[in-house]
Image 1: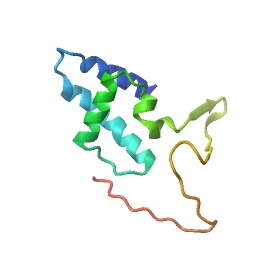
Image 2: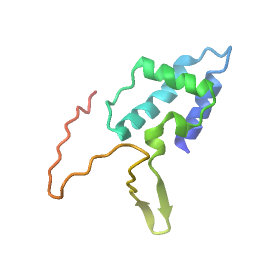
Image 3: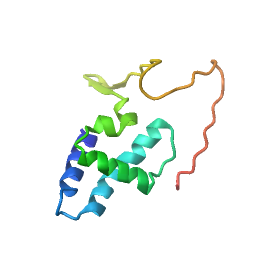
Image 4: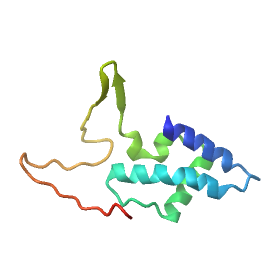
Amino acid sequence: MLFESEIKEAAKLLKPGRRRLTEALARIRPLAILDAMIKGEKLQASDRELANVTADVHKNKSWGQIFVGAASNSFFVKRDGPNISLRIVKKEGIPIQLVPEGTLIVRRCNPES
């Protein structure tokens, strides 16, 4: 719902004659950062990537088409609390790499970037 509502608001701000690109980018940038993090990419979206997103918003693409990484995750809430299910498939979604059990994986990131 968050992605859908923010994209709708950004689309309103990007309508011709509104000249509110800065406000629209302020709504789109956090979504692009979250999408990139889910895909395992760098954290900050470039101006070119944001321009591509705004172009997709102009084309009335759905948020799932614009932010493929975030759309590939599903969260369902059941009566006893939130549960997260992970479904791994070979031919759709974000590419993953399976490692042998017991393998230690270290990924370093800079939280300030």
